[in-house]
Length: 429
Image (cartoon, rainbow, N blue to C red; front, top):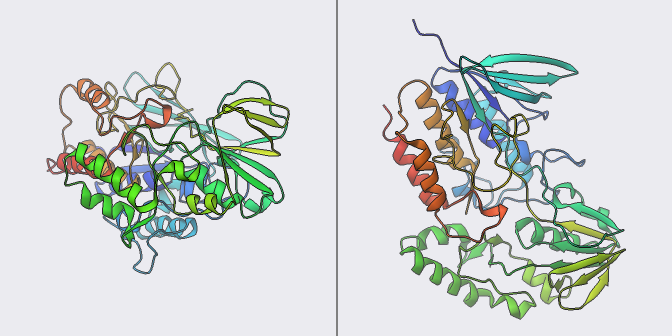
């Protein structure tokens, strides 16, 4: 009689819980370690700085029909763009429905993961000051990639308060402050809009142009409309999408912002329906890229300058797996060569679930990755040969040819990626 395999899942966020659910479906023993106190990971709001990056007004930026697990749809009464409270409740109800809580150990820090001579994973954890080690047949890494802040570097020193969007929780804390927001991504535009409701002034500094996409186009969520347009050849889709956005809301320059350098898809788009409105109403002021700091004065590359009390750096995150020796596995810089964005080219019993950034939502893809992982571990799916070559091919031929920045190392096209995962899953018995 075969011995049941035992798998360690790191993290009880959206990727971790679907990993656990699908492993259990295949009769695999599962232990989930999570440093927090509740299911939901990044979507569990905490007024203090923590693993979570959401702030009090956060709503999802992908629409609900493209942001739900296939095995557990959103409640029918949820809005097109659910709030962080609704998302946390959704993930916790998922865990209750599939009886996952009994497999989760909260308040537990994963300190170290090491392979032994038998290719088993020795996982060292600490809880309530007690450290222990347990052995597992496989490891599902689901610790997320939106928790370790990446800060920008500019000459000089800023003597005011410097913070990252990760640590912004309640915007009333910025009341009567002179605020500078750095960045043009989703967090930056949300922080600029929300802070301007309380601040004495809010400026936003862009290094380059971004595509700003409204949440609704022709009365429908913009990702639904984008999904319809994807039947076009990619180069036509990019041109058509670029033109459509300009027709709907005009050019960036008409709002005082730099134009994107390339057509839509060259970088990750920003989903926001309020930034342009607040700019044209004088609540937010556009600024060029930063040249240097001097005390509380920020000098910009167009020769202008201004004084600020607070700078909020909305400049992304560093991919981090602190439980691995950096000489062993380290994706903090450069390419991330994982086949199907999950399979390591050499180590067959480690799976990275949710380590990708779609133009859309992560966890529907993470659900499919989890099903493939579970099927492989019980012999119902076989990985192809030459995984290393396939992983490198994915790096060389991404879904989008994007600007080379840390943010774009793990980008995938939501629909294409799901299609590839579904195709592989269909090969399972």
